[in-house]
Each structure stands twice: as structure tokens, then as C-alpha cells.
Length: 118
Image (cartoon, rainbow, N blue to C red; front, side, top):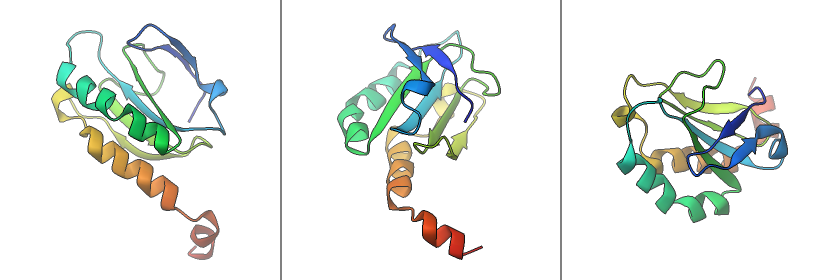
């Protein structure tokens, strides 16, 4: 995951380097036009659950080089992208609970075991 800086929908600025190697990431890139209000409400409702999974959820309309909008991705604390979805419209983004499932996968992964499986 390349480092980036974006303005969230709430107006905060997030520099990825401040959470890199510390926190898992759920990143949602929305197009400049459109609302996606229902999707945003579902993500907001899970904010505390994301925190319990040592993750931050970032939703932005800023352009992120290499990532189309709409898109949703989940990356571990070291920046390894474990899931990415790039549908043609916001309505087809993964539901919040699916993104949470990917965070649970990150929490259960065993890097040592993955190395042995190769």
C-alpha cells in the first residue's frame, strides 16, 4: 500500500504514514459525485467494532493514485492489501460487515504458517 494523504468526509486529514505499521486499514474511496449515504451510515455504525479490530476506517472523496473510485480495500498494519473491491457504482461496494470479516481474517492470519505453506 503506497503512502497517501487524504481528507476524510468529516474534514479530517489522514496521512497514512501516521498509522502505517500501527493499525489495520479499511479505506473507502468514493467518487466526487453521489452520496452513498446508506453505505456511510453502515460504516459509521461499525466504527467501534473496527477499533476493536485495531483498525481505522477512512472514507474519502479525494483521488488516491492507483485506486479508482468507488473502491474499498482492507490492508493489514504493514500495508499488505488483503482485499480490494472496485465496482462500477457505490451501491455495489462490499457491505460493512463484509469489510469487518476481512479484518477478522487479518487478525487470525499466522505469518509464520503462511511462510511454511509456500
